[in-house]
Length: 153
Image 1 (tube, helix red, strand yellow):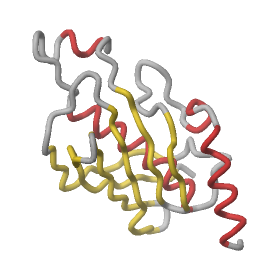
Image 2 (image 1 turned 30 degrees about the horizontal axis):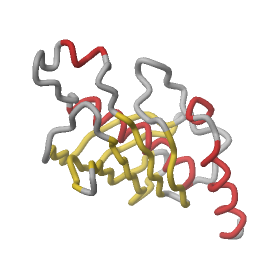
Image 3 (image 1 turned 30 degrees about the vertical axis):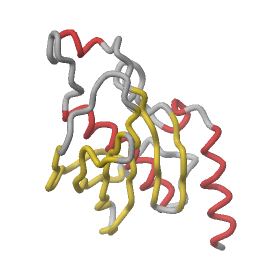
Image 4 (image 1 turned 45 degrees about the horizontal axis):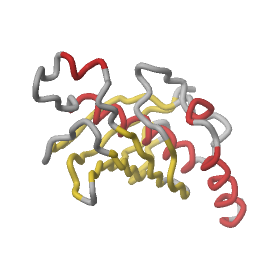
């Protein structure tokens, strides 16, 4: 497929409801919006609402987004990146997190923050995709690492 055609199909997801792109639903949907998409590379965002239920227990009086939920936002963004890499944006629901590697959490993510999630496909091995993902808040990298996603047949 010509690069120009592929780019146009990638750009078409920018205006879609995130629920058209992912099978996840509240309370386990950790992307609000796709900001940028190119073949194999996606940037998304998530507003961290201070009313999130998990803040009641993590941690009372000093709320902090759990690292596992930051990784989940990376995995959801990475599923869309894998689909764009394969030019399969009509069916982005077929990618599953298989492995987390070398994940680093550098700064806390707090209520009111806007998490910018960037995911890029680095390699593909048959049905497996190695993806580098990073999250930023106010231009500062708060977490990054590598994920392996598997394409369901």
